[in-house]
Length: 316
Image 1 (cartoon, helix red, strand yellow):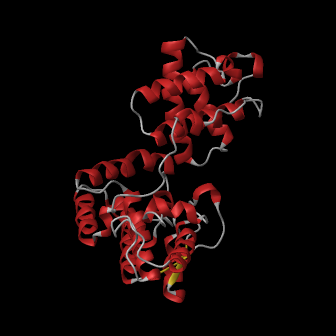
Image 2: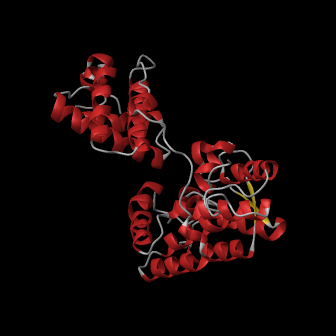
Image 3: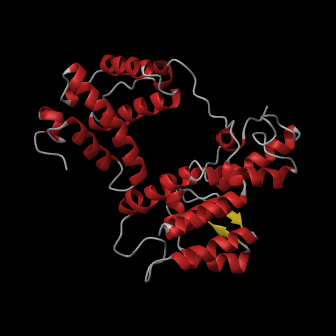
């Protein structure tokens, strides 16, 4: 909560510590929700705040200038960070300062300061395309007592769900839709609270994933969260533990399963393997490729075909 004193107070009233102030600003900016976005932005801001305090003596939001952010960009570039990492860190600084200064912050250009264009084209075949690898990972998760994390992985692979969508999904509603319409509408936990219809067909794999999720559901809950549990608590607990285990068994994370879903859908829609699977080359003709990307964009909840390249590879 913002202290009295507003713009004249230290950190403009958001707290005495720069890193803490940034987190408070994010919680206000996102209305107490969007836990994944808040956590990501907060961690990036913490890195900046730590550097600003130690290297530039800056302890107050009012002392942060575009020039200071430019200096920070040069430092993290010198550390050999990925372009995407640099751009994300700078974008988070823009988010926090734009809200804190009520639009009076002159945003820096993450792309210009990063010094290169980020690659948004997948070049690595998702390991989760191999269903045996997914089954092995799910067994490992269950053996570790992470039954709900295993269910999330299954839903991501079968329906292309984000982890937040999978854990917040109303499973009874999905089960009814699967039975009546052989498709489910992904509505819960969507990025940015999107409400557009997002129907995804239910395959045999999808039915298995739904059954496993229903079996893993805590008593009295409509979804995979316990009735006394917050998404933030789940994210920092079982979901994070599951992600570490997935990496140990060869999967890069839950998002890898989402990419595998997209690659599989591309094959079904175009009758050709996804470009990333075909060695980075598009085998389908341009029209079939474009139509497949349009469908996949909707099913993934993006709505933009250019984003699909991050899941299935280049359209060239």
